Image 1 (cartoon, rainbow, N blue to C red):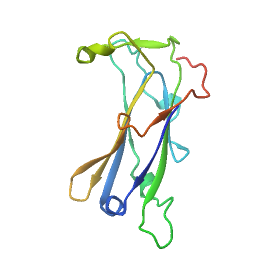
Image 2: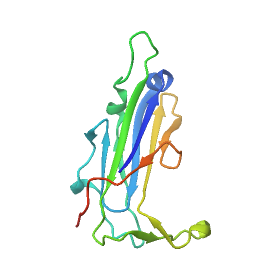
Image 3: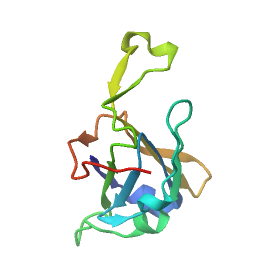
Image 4: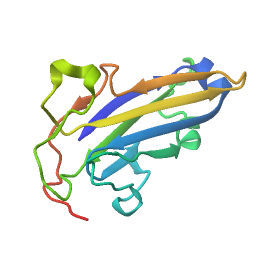
Length: 150
């Protein structure tokens, strides 16, 4: 279970025209924003992960436009929590081989993982990365799913 919390400032909220979340996870991934599911297991992409890992794109503009966490009298910020739960996949393996030759020091095995990136498009057409799984703000722990299968 991967989880993170982020806050959008008033400047981003005022100029936000769209926000898209890109998620690629080994095994099926269930994604939630503020506790509301964005998908179910039946809508997640599936591959055998041998050569390709599929990804999903979610338009979460409406979810980010709400002002949860805004405090009366303070700047209007929007605080949200994102969670991604991965299952074990049909092979129930503990690790997958690293296939990126540029990452030679990690060649061998690594734990199951997810890659996610949240990108906001602003009124001037610019794009801003709000968060991504490599930015140090995500936490991970064992989740409640102990088995899944195609």
